[in-house]
Every structure is written in structure tokens, then in C-alpha cells.
Length: 633
Image (tube, rainbow, N blue to C red):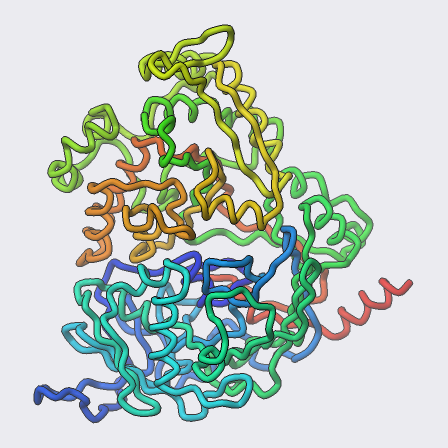
């Protein structure tokens, strides 16, 4: 499992949904596993209490492990790290609801029932919960909460808080949560420190692990406050950091909690070493870059190829005060793409979508803007064994055949069944535009006085790209110029982040840029990406409004896959349906994460195998002091 470098596991899983669904989600432990008193009422045998859960055989670490292998248990505490947040501002410290723009980094104030090990693909170890029991038939899962667990205001974390949190998130939170926890029938507090989740979806191999990464909110606080309304209050969590300073429009600061109840647990030893985690807000990426060069921020994920290639010629870098780090990606390369709003009639015809996708001239962008550092993304599971290649296999065809008629109708082509992937489009731009015009004519359009008009409606084909980051203008404009050559009326609008989010929630756009991160073991999060249920949910990842019964069926089969081979077959079939539907215009990927830092940090070397784990970094006091002296000079 690999998460964003600045995010704690709960955020990686809740927002990016990097969860698994391929192998048996059974719990495992060392040979000295404890046997709990059975809470079953049917006379069945007791279920062993375990210290860890894994999707892959047994967890790597025994019950008596001291700390994760990649951390420095003697890392010094102290110092600060300043991140860059690009966007106009934030107006809420509640990240679980639709309304408002949540503050960057806010999830690090919360603890979950169990925590992941960045050196394992998907294993969880006790955090709020010290023990776990999973019914052999996966009809229920129980957690023993640690009696010493506390919220940041000193109140104990109890089973009632867990039950309250599940109901609150599903009833009043972002619709994502009702979908994500759809397989949980209910949660029941059996006593103050024992909670049982009854699972209605016992076929989902990942569901027990999803439940184990459940964030727990304080019942005593949220019962007294409106959970659905944006707030800037420093409300209590139970995690290693608490909200220290809120300055909307400028910054949010998280202060390490010296009284953090779990600081000595094995999953936390050597982690959460930095005293102050700061997110400074900048409206523009160029301004944020200048701030980094000036030392106003000291950690940067550099997504701009030109900056990485030729931008590091400033004095601090030449003096060795700024370092660049390249971290290879271990998960499938994320699909970033222009997304059509399928709720609009003009984008219903797949020939129109295919034609418009042909106007994206990646070879020109890569040569003239990206310094040949990127590769074109083709698959929604790029660089993984789940990516569809060549012709569909017999096993894939068996999955697709029940939906042949509706797929032929929606895709208006049999190529899905008969032609190989990747799609054989012309490389030369002239040939691409010629093919695009032919497709538009097939879809009923003709050019009148340089404008592409539909023969039946007499309406011109128009398209507006909605952005909140002006740095992407150089990617959008060449595509819009090519569309204009076909007679399409094009425009681009750059708005502030709040207006962007509001328009997106109201489905008020033609095209936006969206991201579809994937783990090596996709699962429940696919419902939020592609299914009919998520199509009209204001804050789901299904921003395109895709609603197709064949895709719904494939997603449910994927979630219930019995083994790795079956999972790969289903994801390849899903990938094939999505790619031949031309629902997005794919961008590009580099296969690595590029990071620049001011040289005051210590960090694991080598990095853990499945995540960089920024929580295991620390500030070297001597280096930080030297940089502060330089800054004063």
C-alpha cells in the first residue's frame, strides 16, 4: 500500500481508498495468540484474539514487536516542517462532510482502530484496538479497545464513540462513507471497551480491514455541535497532533501532543517526531515555488517537469542547502485525466468523446513542456498486472458477454470485444484531427462557417474546461486550440478553489481534471469511482456521472473476488470497458514521486517498501539551527 507522502494512513484510505480486495481477509498472529472469551451466543467455539490482521498470509511482525523496522526509535523530537498548500484557503476543520473546504493535513488529529505498516503491502496492527477477533465466516468482527485510549481533551475513547462515529459518518457525513461502509450492518457496544461490527457483506474480502481503519470521533463533543456545518474550531481528536493555530486564508498549524496517549505503542515508536506541522496556503503554484526557494516552506512535492528539469539553479540548491529526492512508485500509476460530464447531452455520444480525446497532443507536450520526462497514461491500472492488454481473454469475455447488448449500445461499437488494447490511434496530429472530424461527422455534426454544428439540434458543440490552478493552463490551451481547429467552441475558466468545489458539487461543468488513484489491490473504493449509485452523489469520485449496469456488475464482482487471479481478470475487463468508453482524456505519468526539501531532516534510508512514511521523519537540530542563522543573515 502506498499513500501520499504527507498523509496519515486514514486519509490515504478514506480519500484515496488504497485498500485491497484480492485475497482472504483473515486475521493472523504469532503462535502465542491469545484466546478470548467467546461473545457468541450460538455455542460456537471461541475465536482467537489477534494483535494484527493481514490480507497476505501472516503479518510480518510478531505480537511482541518493539517498533516498525524502518523507523529510528531514537529520533529526536522537536522542530517544524512547513508544507505548501496551493489553493485560495480553507473554511473547515471538519473533513468528513460535503460542505466547506477542509484544511490540509486535518486527518492527522485522528486515530484509527488499527494502523498500517509501510513495509508490508497490507497488514494492520493495533492502535485504538489492542485485539481483534474475526468470525471465520466473516459475519462479524470485534475489537478490544485499549482502556488507556484518550481523546485530546482527556475524555476516554469508548465503544460508544465507535458506534456513534459509524452512524454519524453514514447518516450525516460525506456520501462516500455510506457507500464505503455499506457492507457494515451495524456496530454494537458490548461493553465500554468492546465493540462488534456485524457485516452484511460477508463475501467482501477487504471489508474487515476497511472496518479496522475506521476513524473514531468523540461522541461527547459532536453531540453538542452541528456536524454538518463547516467549522474552524480546534475540536478534539485522539491522534498524535492537535490543532494548534487556525488562520483561514494563510495557514493551519498542528502541534504534536506531548500527552498523546499512544506515543509509546509499537506502531508509534520512532514516529511523529516533529513538533509543528505547518501548511502555508498560496493561491498559485508559481508563488508557492518562489516561497520554497526563499526558505519560507521547507518540503515540496514537485509535480512540474520543467521546474524539476531546469528550475533548481538558485543559490540555496547550489550551496547544498536544498536536496532533491526521487521515490519510485510501487502502486499502479495514477490515472489523471480530463473528465467529461456525461450528465450533459452533448457528451452522451462516445464518438464525440473519442474525437475530442484525439485533440490531446501528448508528444508535443512531452517534448516542448515536459522535457520528455513523462509517459502517456493508457490504463486505469497502469503499470500493474491488472492493466488490460491485447484482445480480451476467454475469462474476460465470460464477464462481458451477459452485458453485450448494452455495451454495444453504449459504446456504439463492437471494438470492445474484437480489438486489442492499447487503442491504435494515429501518432501524427494531422491524422488524429482528420480521424476526429470523421467521428464527429458520424455523430451528426457538420462545419458551418468554421463552427461545428449538430445537424438535428443546430446547436454548436462547445466545451469549457474548469480549473482552479493556473499552472495547468499550459496543458489545457494546446488541446483547446486543436479542438478549435475542428470547429469546437472552447473556453477555459480559472476560479478559486471554493467556487470550483461548489460548481463541481452542483455538476456545473463541462470538463474538469480528476484523479483515480489505485492500489495493487483495488476494492470498495471502486464503487465511488464508477458506479450508478455514486453518479449523482455531490462529492463522490464519479465526477463524470458514469452510470452503466455492466460497470456496476464488474465492480461488485471485483469486490468479491476470491483470489488474485480472479481479481486480475475482473480489473482487466473493467479497464477494457472504461477505456473503450472514452469517458476521460488520459494525461501522463512519471512512475516516481519527486520531492525537494531544505536539508534539515533525517529520514529512513532506505524508505519503507510500500510508503515513504513522512511520519517517521525527524528534524536534525543542528541543521535546523544553521538554516535559521542563514535566514537571519
